[in-house]
Length: 118
Figure (tube, rainbow, N blue to C red):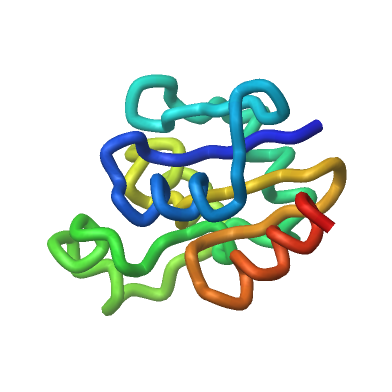
């Protein structure tokens, strides 16, 4: 399976898609704002990532607005927040077979590029 969870309105996601030369010919695209993540999809991401916290964006505006940084969040909290609002998913999430790449850190994008483009 080759899939990317992203936001079509996110310039960083667009840049990464372009850099990795991803197309709908070889990848399944899911714009998480218009096509919400299901619990099953999140569970699959969790299995590959090892935790919900690894998938959680602490940069999300709602994270600060709700004062979540001052709370001790559990794995269940991270899961429920991601399912509640798309901005809590660290983006993009790229899955290539059984390998997951989470976020836009340079090292993550470089590793994804090697996996995808050799």
